[in-house]
Length: 367
Image (tube, rainbow, N blue to C red):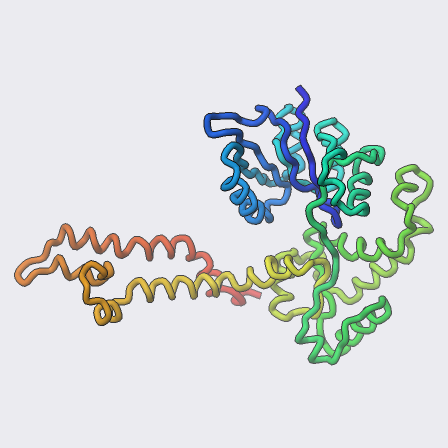
């Protein structure tokens, strides 16, 4: 039986977004508690955000609940499930060949007649059409977010060298030259993760490539020769300002290096990625260490509760230890049970956070 899905598309980077299910391998699992739908996401890194949205939905919809699936190598997993006729009810995926394959297989429901489609900007709908088979002008997906490509720069280094934000290509090259002359590393490239090499190319090509190039290339009417020389030259020019090991540096390591001030600019990220992939990962060890120490100091505090709490019913577990110690005897069985209760929260917090403390200790120890 052919499983039909309702799809939404993420514009800007042409990513498919949530797909509201009309059916799945079990046509939605029904029970006395209602129907359960599966939300399949191709981006594991946004699972926490999706989970918050799903939690809000589940709180207000008692007859329908949603669960999230976000596997590694999601594209392969989804195509395998499609071959087995085991499609999820909802899918968040990129507007790439995987989307086109699912759409062309007849797995998606046409949403063109839905009222909310009229609220979508025409330019975003065109992105949906562009990734449909034969550019069919039907809305099998609804855009729910936008994306952008850019260059992150180190504000302090720009101020230090009196550099203004460039607005043209020539100004950008002048900035790179000035930084290089000042002994700074102008650009940080992270091409060990191959996808990051697309960022500068996509930014340059979107302005310089012929507008009809994609369609003409698919139709065999043109080639990259004669249309992309300037793009390639500008791309190669940027590599002159990259670090020596730009093919050996990973995206995560590059973000950490940039956050530590080892380069003036890094290519290919937006503000959310700056915080989630650069700032917060660097702060994780410090945040975890402060949280653990603050918790332990508060939890183990004996003096302040002893001075401030006179009512026995409000005493903390630390003060309660003395209840089991009498003038001539000690109730060891009860005392040790209470010791264990006091110790458990500290152990649990440390077990879950110890790796961040270790990372904080060794950070910078190995270059």
